[in-house]
Structures are given as structure tokens and as C-alpha cells.
Amino acid sequence: MKETFEFTDKIKKNLFYMMGIGLLGMILVFFAYPHNQHGRFWSNILACTYYFTGIGLFGMFAVSAGQIAYGSWQTLEKRIFLSLSAFARIGGFMLALILILGVLGVHNLYEHVNHIIHSPVNPETTTKIIYFAPAFWIGRVLVYASLWAGASIVLNNFFARTDQTDPKVYKRSKLLCAAFIVIFAVSESAISWDMLMSLDTGWYSTLFGWYNFASYGCAAWAMTILLVLFLKSQGYLERVNENHIHDLGKLLFGFSIFWSYLWFDQFMLQWFANIPEETSFWVERFGTGYFKFTIFLALAINFAFPLLVLIKRGAKRNFKLIGFGAALLILGHYVDFFNYTFVESGWEKSVVAAKKKEALEATENAPLFAKLEKGEKMEAKMEGKTAEKSEMKAEGKSEKAEGAKGEKAEAEEAEVPESNLSGIGIGELMIFTGFLGVFLFMFFNNLAKRPIIPENDPYLKENERLEVVYS
Image 1 (cartoon, helix red, strand yellow):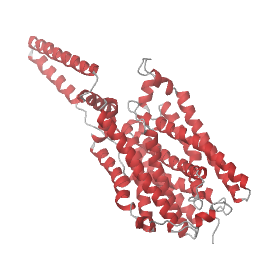
Image 2 (cartoon, rainbow, N blue to C red; image 1 turned 60 degrees about the horizontal axis):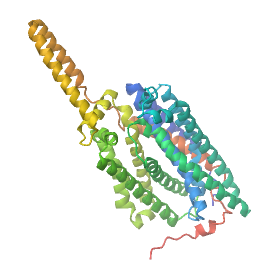
Image 3 (cartoon, rainbow, N blue to C red; image 1 turned 90 degrees about the vertical axis):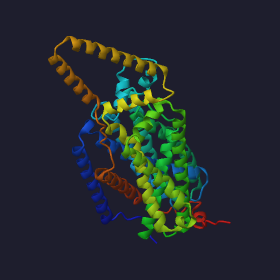
Image 4 (cartoon, one colour; image 1 turned 180 degrees about the horizontal axis):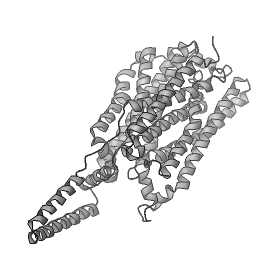
């Protein structure tokens, strides 16, 4: 029976290949899509960094929640959850670096925020100017990153001591886990506002933090299932059986339904309220064929598949089927974050502004000032046309021809074709593969530092006797 994971050269070599593929993908996307200050490249970096950091944070949350609740179900997988957190040691600082580069103007992912920061003070933007003050904005992200890195190191080192027989060590772990739950509850919501919701400062959702938690929570359960199955195939975790995998499958299914509820709740409430600053977010996505496809693709993978397949008891006890489902859901939730991250940087900014304005004017419940502004502009336009006609009559035919050419040029300029440069192509898949390689390298490196099974954990024997029974 193998007790300590051996991080072999073969596994390292395969992971380095994955990282190399990711590096090539970055080069491909950077040079193939130079538009909007290489917006597609930076969107890839942001989406993958945020996604895998979230999975790492959720690993610490799973251990902490089980520890506080006196749970025994996760004892055999505890070291797996803790090792997931290894990526969070660098992920938070990578997010802070992306933010710093955005504030400095290296990329334009946070162009909306820069407009607010440099806009004149008025009642509508005063609080946003304070919240997005560069020093405060970057500073709090660096605080989150430091807390996550510290929590990952402390929790991994502390739980290594639970292999000892001293019961006081186990009791102290509950206080440590309770402290992390508080840190996690605040920081995971705040980072979703600071890094993703701020991509479009005109849109907001009061349950966006919960939604992010559910999305990368599903991915974390799926990643755990895949890693447990891989370790079993390598001769480790022999005491893990179909009952333990069944338990993980139930958690994966439950979080999938939780995610689906939050997705529908967020969309339905904003659609029903029909407030322009909320609906503009959905207009941009449903108004584009590609993003309409990826939205329904995410729903099909993350909701329909678990509901139709993983709901079955046999599916959660079939290693091949649950493994396939876990891999599919990891990809599905990446698509979910793609839908939130890529639109703003992929669209030409003039087109985005025009569509938002069009959505405002077309909404039945649009503010009165917007309708008045539209009416004033229409009157001005009509007056301009009347004056132009009278002037053209007074002038010669050559001037008429010249005016007609000018009008044609203005019309062509006004009818700018929609330019959406975002998409999940070979470059995105390569970059995702590279980030996955880094994530797995850090996971296996951390796992190899101590025995996989906490032999002296007081709940180990209970977990070994786990049996999922339906009456």
C-alpha cells in the first residue's frame, strides 16, 4: 500500500509539455489578435488565473467546512483538498499584477474603471471613484492574495500535525478553519467584484459572489474526483472505494443544481426588472450569435448534463462515467467564466457604446431623460437636414455633389460593422492546457511532501467504513 505520492520524472515531463503548449497558445493569441491592446490575450490570462485560483480557494473551504462540522466524509480526501490550494499561493498575486497593468494602461480590460477614475466628480460616480481609487483597489487585492497564500501554507503545515496523536492539535484546527471561513466569505465575494464585475462598471449583480462560488465550486469537486481516480489508478488511495466517489459525485451534482439556480435567478430577475443598466449586459451577449451559443453551451454542460446523467445513483458509482462527467464540467465552467470575461475586451469600444445606447432607448422603462435626449437629438438632426437642404439649393450643382459625397461617407462611418474578436479557439484551449499544467504541477508537488492518508485523524476509521445506503 503506497502512502506517499512519488512525483516522478514522467509526470513532471508531461506537465512541462502542457505548460509548453500553453506558452505557444499565449504567443499565438498575442500576435494573431493585436486588436484592442491585445484584449483577447489578456482576457485569457484573467479568465484562467481567476478560474484556477477559485478552485484552489475552494479546496481550503471544503476542508475547513468539514472540519468545523465534525465531518468524517472528507478524511481520506483531505490532503487532496489541501493540495488544491497550492495554486492560490500565486494566483492572487497574478490577479493583482493583471490589475496593476490595467491601471497603468498596458491593457484595456478595465477601461470602464479608468473612465470613472478620470471623470469629473458627480453624485452618480462619487462612490465608484472612491471604491476604484487605484491605491485602494490594488491594495485590497494584494491583501486578499497575501491572506490566501498564508492560509494555504498554514493549513497544509498545521494539518500535517494531525498525524500526531495529540487531540489538542485537532481541536485547535477548528479555530484555524473558522478563521479561514471568515476570510474566505469576505474575500471571495470582493474579488469577484474587483476582477470580473468591474469589467463593466455599469452592470452589477447582488448575488455575483455566490454565483462565482458555485461555479468554481463545481469545478473543484470535479477536479477532486479526477485526481482521486488518477491516484487510484497509480496504486494510491486503495481505501477509497465507490462509496467515497459516490459522495463526491453527490456534492458535484448538488453544486451543479445550486449553480443552475443562481444562474436562472440572476438572469430572470434582471430580465423581469428590465432596468437598462442591467439588461445591457445581456444585450451584448444574447445579441451576438457566438456568445448566445456559448451561454447555452454552458447551460447544457453545467445544468442539463448533471440533471440527466449524474442524478442517477449508478452514474456516481461508475468510475469511467463520473470521470468523464467531471472532466466535462471542468470545461463547462471554464466556458461560464469565458462568457463573463471575454466580451468587453473583444468588442470594439465604439460598437459596445452604441449597443448600450440603443438598449437604453429601446427599453420601455428607460429613464425619461434618455427619451428626452433622444427627442432633442432627433429635432436637432431634422433642423440640420432642413438647413443643409436650403444651403444646397442656394449653392451650385458641384456643391450638391460634394455634400452628397460627405453624407455618404458619414453614413458609411456610422454603420460600423460589429466586430467581435472573442471566441474559444485553439489558442484558448492551448492557454487553458498550460494553466492546467501549472495547477497540476503545484498540486502534485505539494501532495508529495507528506503522506496522502492522515493515519491518526480521529475520523479516519469512520470514513473507511463509509457506505452509501438508500432505504
